[in-house]
Image 1 (cartoon, helix red, strand yellow):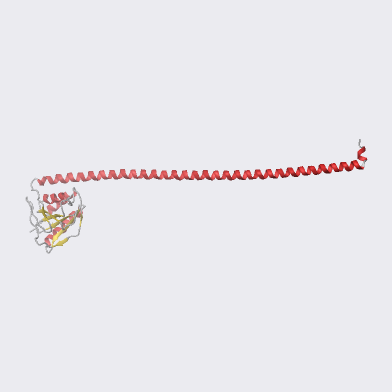
Image 2 (tube, one colour):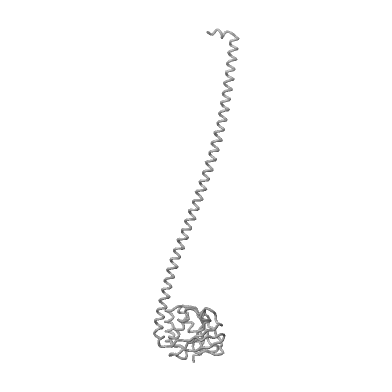
Length: 260
């Protein structure tokens, strides 16, 4: 059976075949290794590309989530702003209603106090002048020499329940009594919530008698001018009214004239 083993030619042939088989095996192993390497590279590239694609998708999702979060935050902020404005509007409306009710109540109380004396006095006629000063006192029971302490107290009481506003007070130049009354009137008006200017001392070509209320025009007369006129009439001081376009618009001035 092993006779060929003792033949040199057979051994050489066997050796050649074994070498060829070894070379073939080595070649197959090399090819297998190359194929595995190529396949490994392909898998690596595939995994890298897949990972990059997944990372891009994750970034896109994160970006979308961030955008949604910003939109939700902006929506919440807008909602908070709208809610705050609504609350402020409700507060303003409530405060406005209270202020209107308070003013209405003040007018009602002032009108009630004035009606007790208005029936005893005549209405006042406003004489319009353009650049010159004229005054006409109203009828009724008035007191010369300026208001007394009782009239000042009555004035303060009437002003406390009526509307408030701005008032310019003017006294007669070189008339100490006029200036003294103007200072007292300024004090009372300020204490009752009015805004008064510094006393203006002025000279008149025709000095008025008593108190004169001056406005620029009927169209620009303050809403409280009628109340002020009635109040002075009620306390029993000589008072007249005048329109003079030399005075400021939307203002009212009270001239304290001669009281002797």
